Length: 209
Ligand code: SIN
Ligand code: FE2
Image (cartoon, rainbow, N blue to C red):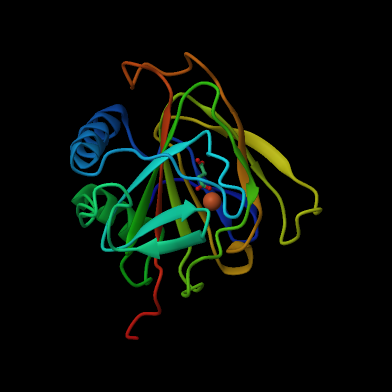
């Protein structure tokens, strides 16, 4: 059981308040420890090299990175050359609840948004395994999250992702376009410096391959 969820669209489930305040604080500390080992880096757009406004890091055997040569999963941090730290147990437990039956996640992308950061509409399609959902958990200031359809020009809708909320998209929605329009500054007291942390758990390689 993963608590009450709201079906946003076929394959998209929204779990408001999935993590209570104590669980959010515990996760905040686990992410703080992971970032001490694998510091935030500045991803760059494929081809143009334009920096993202979101800073990123990862935990897990694989991490998502992007630079002039493209985006990809790799086992080491692009700046330090060291392996990513392990995915915290609490996130593995969240995955087990939110993605029952899926093979374990291999990557947890850590996105850190300051109050001006945003993330353009995109698909998560760098994973070779598409049968597992994307599992997203949010901490800190709310985000205006936008989600659309399987083509860039399909109609979109937006809603707020608050601290502690979980969202999954899988099955028919695994490749939906999504992005973050803006962060609601001062909308949460969880992170002392404000801003937002989003964690997305992903299965990357086919299970048993
Ligand atoms: C992402 O699509 O990588 C992150 C989405 C979010 O920050 O909610
Ligand atoms: Fe994404």
